[in-house]
Image (cartoon, rainbow, N blue to C red; front, side, top):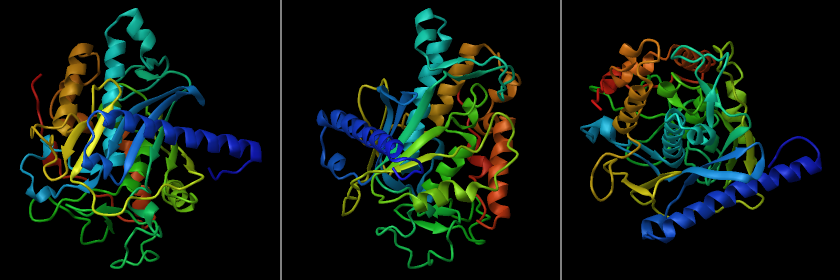
Length: 394
């Protein structure tokens, strides 16, 4: 880990980063040993999130895990709410973490003494959530750490040996927002031509992993829906396997966010502790498989997703991480709460309406987007509102 401070502190940080890496690798090996396939062996990017109590590694628990490097060609997808469109490992891993957070909330809401003791969430006296009232927060000392085997696609990967930038020279677009190439790998900078994407007539695009991770550093990992209930959940550290130093990563995830200010409480700009391994992982050569896998703590095994269809590889059913699945989980949670959230009639409507009703979250997001745009780093491309007109009966 390349951080400032004394030798003893650096050695301790390095040991922690190496331990996070080994825990994720061991969990992935454990999960794939029973269902080994060539697609698992040929994965190009692995991401995992570990939960700790403080920095005590004895408490460390892998809570979500994913592989993948591809993004669906959305123009060829009929039901976008039931497909997993962004199958990059970091993004899928974060969605798997959201499933873990739902499970922890359900544990707390079951009203049993054992469930309340085991849940990572506690009532937040004097707090402030979008749903009104005090809401919930993480227990004191609960931290989340991400490991990813390769630099996140986008600005953080520029100047790395496996990033091709022949079309757009990296110096010209350094720090710019970038979008993923639909149906394949790689990213392109956001240009004025792409800035006005529409559902009809123009190809839909997805922001790069670097940009999404920067967004998580401001609005949290929990997303707009859960912000009705819980205070922001931030990553504490990020360890990348292929890096020899964290300079480019720090520029993309920390320094270019300096203009993001005056965020509504309880949001803040979270500065990640960035790490790399003492011996860099080798990024596997060759073509990536058309499969992305995901797992959350409590799952019996891996879910395999076809990166061609965005659905379960064998059955073709919607992924447990797709928009419709997570929204159904959210609505079941609302039923458990019996309308205790203010504005519940709006929240129980469409997916888009429920997200937009999270006022503080949306204001924090707009502060983030506006700061980048004013800084000349490009326009954040959001999916058209039509895609959020999803209503599910549970």
